[in-house]
Image (cartoon, rainbow, N blue to C red; front, side, top):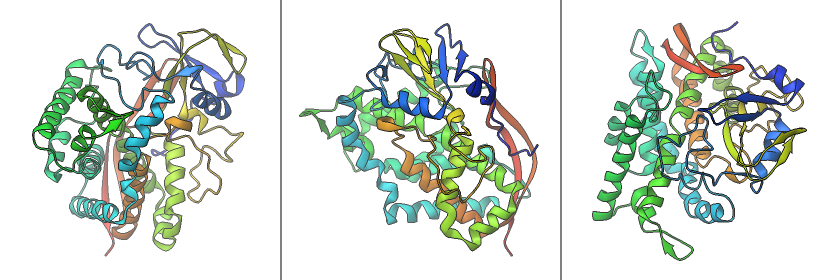
Amino acid sequence: MEKSALPDPFENARLKKGLGDLNDQNDPVKMILRHKDVRKTAHNYKTFQSEAKPGRIVVPSEVNIRETRQIPFELDPPVHGAYRALIEPWFKRPLQPEYTEKLSAQISALVDEVVQKDSFEVIEEFALVLQSRALTLLLNIPYEEAETWISWGTHVFRSEDTALDADKANILYDYIDGQIEVAMENPGEDLYSVLLASEVAGKRLTKEEVKGVMVLTFAGGRDTIINAVTNAIAYLSEHPESLERFRKEPEIIGKAVEEMIRYFSPLTQMGRVVTEDTQVCEHAMKADSRVSLCWASANRDASVFEKPNEIIIDRKMNPHVGFGFSHHNCLGASHARQIMKVLLATLAEKVDRIELFECKENIEDLAEFQRKVGYDYIHVKFNPIQ
């Protein structure tokens, strides 16, 4: 098997029963595995809510490490829609030419830096750096601030030996509290300042609401982008023909990004809390129990995707749920898509081939399922185009 392959551990359970079972900190979760059931459940916010206790819809649950409600992620319609309408235009800025030009300059400079090396570790030296620098554009703050976030490592809620680390989470919370205070004293054109000056339903956002948006922005787009970037580099190291196609057919890069997001599924799942006794694919669900929408399983459903366990970089029909589905579709999707598009185009322009030397897989332990989500480390070399 190729080192870049991400096997589908959900296939048998998806075909046989449509569900999986996960005991998450003594708060069990029913994992919904089929594409149609995932989409149907994601759309039904009245029965499957996001507006539960803060942190409970996340898998693993974060109820023991935070009280701040992430906005608009942990809200349901119609309140969700009011906050989303306020925030969404800001998160669409990556589609603007000026934004893309700045992002391209960042990624080009980083590739130029690592291409000089005999080898480098992709996660710490490339993906984390890329994600952190790009986030300065999304927040519209000084580029130098990326160094602070890089120093936190690859996850803001997790340490090497602890799945959920409250002390590490507090680094993020304290940082955001401090940045909000700075923006209150000296308003600018950054996201903190914009949120502090905004209103929903005629009321100014509170500091706690602003913090909720910012926590979501930092936490939601960190591991996911790092996983997508790292997996893409691993894939291209074993599929140089795809890199060559990007050079000759740059028009397919957009489709390739969607296909990589489908296949990699950088976020395995996201939960909901059941509001009333109900059923999912003929299985009973009790009120106040938890379910998860398993994006990674839905994206390999052979009833929807032809050759689901292969990356087809110019796949025509691709109704993947890698960025979620329905009203909670990922707020940062435009930012993530632009990062991946620019990255693939830049690699095609500057890199002849990628050599993969060694790697260690990052395996999620999901009880009956063991899923490769990316890597703990991966060493490669970018051989430049001469």
